[in-house]
Image 1 (cartoon, rainbow, N blue to C red):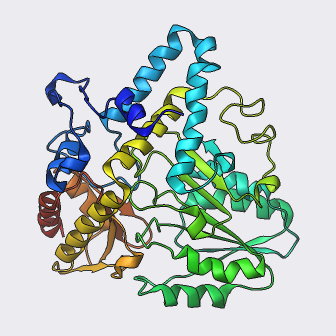
Image 2: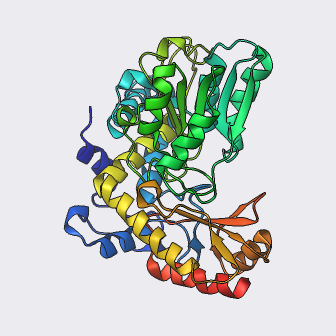
Length: 406
C-alpha cells in the first residue's frame, strides 16, 4: 500500500507545478508549517475558478484542485500507453487501493467499501436489496435530496411497501428536538430509516449516534445519505453506528465527477444483492465490468489531499467561515436564516429564506456579478457553501451584493 505522503507526492501535492501558466509555479510546501490564512489562500489558487468568481455552491458540485486533476491526467496517460496491461495491472491495483484509502478515511474495513459513481447509486443499491412486506414502511424526512428517494420509490413500488416522510422544524434547535420527532414517527411497520448526514437544505448535521440508540434495538436499518458530509466534517461510520453510508466524491471532497463509495456494515453486507455486486465488492469484478481507473485514482488523491491538510482543520475552517456568514446574514432585513445555531449540529452550509424577494431572481442578480449560489426550490431560499477556499472577504462581498439584490 502506497503511503499517504508518497501518494500525495506522486499526485503533485508536495511540489506541485500547475498545468496552466497563468496560475504561476507553486513551490513545495508543508500544510503543518503554514498558518490557516496562508494555507487556505494558497489552496484557493489551486482551483481553476477565476480569481474574480465567488463560488459558493460546493454543495452541488465542488471544484477539483490541481492535485486531483493532475492525478487523473497522469493515470489516463499511463492507461492509454498500454490500456489492457495497465487497466488490469498496476493501475488496476492502484484503483483497488482506493478502497483502503476510503476505509481509513471513514474508519471502516476495506471489504465493506464498494466503489460507486455517486450517492444515488449507492443508496439505490441498498434500497433494491432490502426485502419488505406489503404494508411495511421506510421512514425519511421531507427535506431529502431527490436522488436519495429514487431507490426507495423503486423498492416500495415493487414490494407493496410505502415511504413516509416526517417534517423537521426549520430551523432545528437541538438534538433532543430531532430525537423527539423521530420517536413520534416510528412504528411497528418501520423497517428502514433514511436520513442525510448533512441536510442538503439547511446543513443540519444529523446526530446519527443518538438516533442509532433508538433504531438498533428495534431492528430498523439506519441508512445515511452522506453526499454533503465527507470533505467538510469528519466521518466515522463506527461511531455513527449506521448500517449503510453512501456518498459522492464530487461535492465537498472536491474529487472527480462520477465518483463515490458505499459503506455497508458487515452484518448487512451479505444482504446487498444486485447484479453489480454479484461478484463482490472489489473495485473490478466480473459483475462490475471495466471501471474508470483514472477518476477512481483521482478520488483517492482527493481524500489523501484532505487528510494531508487535516480533517479537523478543514472542519473548523468551514465552520468558522459559515459562522461569520451566518452572523452577517442575520443583519439583513427580509431574510430568515434556517440553518441551525447549535454548533454541534452545524457545518459549512448556511441557508436562508427570503420574505419578499424571489430566490431565483436574487441568485440571478448575484450570478451577474460572478457570485454563484444555490437556489432552494419550494421554500424561496438560497444555500451558501462555505468550503475551505472561501474567505471572510469573500463573505463580505457576497453579503454586500445580496443586500443590494434584495
